[in-house]
Length: 475
Image (tube, rainbow, N blue to C red; front, side, top):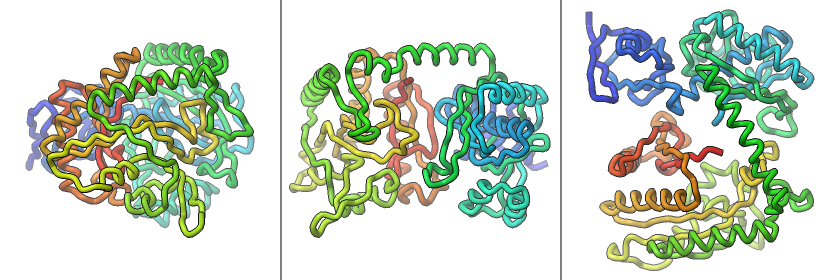
């Protein structure tokens, strides 16, 4: 029988008969903790047969991508429980989020506390059945007819925006949901679950559309891990910055000013000035040149930079002023590039480090605004470094060391690094320049390895123009 060679992150290579499923490979190499796998950079279910030589990475709950799979499958379990308890419910969307998952339903009324208790109990029951989760495909026309006959108008609308034919679904017992996956191999992998809250949510975030009912939840492989998370959640509630900001008179939210536009009170403004003086003085000692740029810019600037094409939904609409269209800036990058461009420079001038405490304005839907965590007007401690290719590694490493120093000075001890990469299969979201992406991603990995820092990779999380290092700090 023809065999395929599978290479693992530790460099080992094993051979298996062509068509061997990833689940069997995981069992063979003793990876009972594997939830899914990344095959040649693409995330796959463990039920996927391996048909050619490949590089294989296991996704576990300790990996952000593994958590995404885990919580996505739990969202499907939530939908299955709701459908069994409320057969009239119409399903909308149920994605994983940073901490857990949610699912939106249309049942014609809000969910109450007693509803959440019943749903949570049914989810535990369904998980104990250890139902296999299977990926199936349906011809696009057949899926559209099925949604129409079942009155699933939200799924039918989602299908209109999916170009695939056939369309993938995931099935567990008699329940199935349209989804690209990947998912857990069985519901029994979901060890402990807690439904946290429920709220109203407009369909597709549009206040002119139907009001749906959203249920938020979290799940973990063990009850001990869930209990520890809930304890941290309660502790965080006691230290909620919105509560402290009000009690300490640091900032205020005033309806007449507008949502997501906090006012800094005298005490809060004092704290802010101390932080601003600290970072500006530190950066200037490290060779950064601080600048000031306007909060407005011509729409043409963002068309040139690509932000208007890739980021428009997060920007405020243009304002017609005389013969120009002006926009409240959502980021400082184009302004700093214009500063660099405004004079002729020699390679001997590099690196040039331009920094600013820049005001920015981003459109956030009212439903996601929260204290100082999600706002519409903010000030970003921002910098852009212009350097020669051979200076790239040293400059990047110096920035990471600067971050580490600031976090140490401010008392941040718990944080981790995520290297955010492009999805090479997404030809819309990311700028198309394979050589540029390969070089930049390779240098980023090389720098992190040279620093001796552990990191995880998140494919598809890069900016539209390049990879980035995201420093993740618990809220």
